Amino acid sequence: MDKNNSFNLRAWLWGKMTSLYPKYLKWHFKMDIGENAVIARTAVLDKNINPQGVHIGKNTWVLRDAIILAHDHCRGKNGKGRLFDTRIGKNCVIGIRSIILPGVTVGDHCVVAAGAVVTKNAPPTP
Image (tube, rainbow, N blue to C red; front, side, top):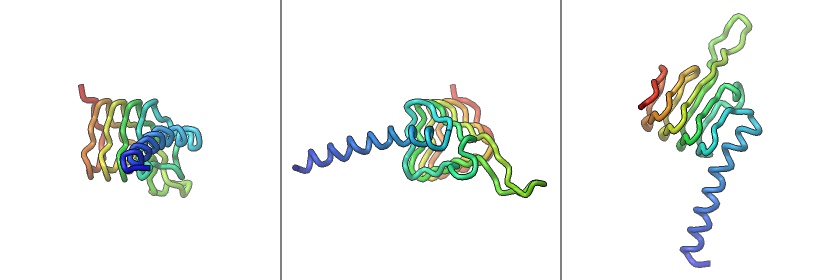
């Protein structure tokens, strides 16, 4: 196999994996992920504690090492952390190594810069 064919095969496989991974998260963890969403395999979503609290809109990209949380570790009267719904709108880009904190809503068409920490709601961009 020559170098160009090898590259094309890897690009094709990578494309298939990025389109299948959101479907796996939706099926296995019951996350609310819109169609055509692209989620990097190295992105950290709240899979263990509150996966149903993660809502990602259609055509949204979550890039490498981004973190989306839907819980905190503050102890309430029941001794457990609190659960939140964290929502990302449609047609958004969540940058590399950015962090979306629990309970935040990122509106439609927003771009979260690489390395940003989102602590408050971001309104939709027209």
